[in-house]
Length: 183
Image 1: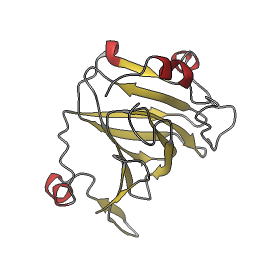
Image 2 (image 1 turned 120 degrees about the vertical axis):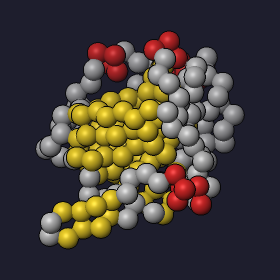
Image 3 (image 1 turned 60 degrees about the vertical axis):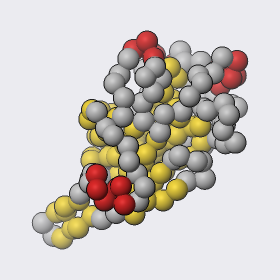
Image 4 (image 1 turned 135 degrees about the vertical axis):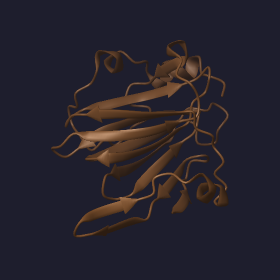
């Protein structure tokens, strides 16, 4: 297990040791004590699992009130995972970081509260994502920003993705800046 800091403070990339041979592989996806030796002390209260078909893009979502951080990884397929800093007092406010997560590469991404999160499915097979979350879900505390907002200028690797009706109606980053969440 190796933890890397990202150019945006708070985001972490966790590279897992994948042990494989002709039979398959084994990977330890979460080990509280090993993560603690790297300074990672987040407590998780819930695990979530989502499946998305090829061509799907989800996000950009956040959970506030209560704030919710997410440790995300893929156990089937591949995704392009994006985290956007939406903390108004951050020096990287409005900046994003993206990383490919796949069943094979053993990469997880820690996305703390104060970030909007989204992903798109890469390739021709569905993607299954696992999320460990640090706060309970509260529908009244969720929000989101459009994935294709020109102010964010995210370089998504898919063109014309399939979106949910909810994601099609998300606010612009300019609208968020006018009334931001105070993390």
